Image (cartoon, rainbow, N blue to C red; front, top):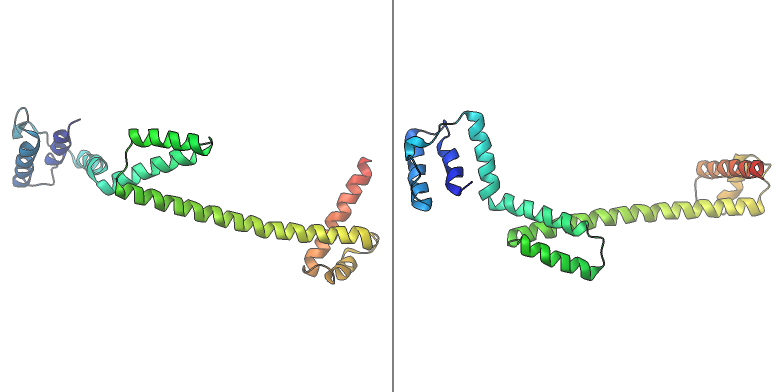
Length: 190
């Protein structure tokens, strides 16, 4: 579909006055040359067809939208690379030769990477917090197994563990209960 065809859809918008449509037609003729059948050959569209045509026209000509789409496409291409760095760079070079990006798309691409990096950092921070919790849990259970009688109640064992491990009494009680269940399971399997 040529650029004039896209313009033809806009000229066919029933919401425009005839003068506005004629003016757009003249601009189109100056840019792209005369159209077969002239102004009278342009079909008047329904409102729905005109809205769809505007949407298509915006996707084709709006540099901001076009830049965002190119940036997303390039970002997805880079993220989906499983190769080593040099192969990824080679593939990216080939990709950019096929789909060149302008400065706006490059800025959008950088913004996507910053957002992605922040998401990864938040995920790593959450994992780090969980690692500390798992470490404290392991420390509490190891101390309980080595130094505390397994026949005393969970709450009493938690009271003794509070002096050793900086975790709430309630959590320590849960850890002891889980460890007792693990011991029962291991004993039943043996």
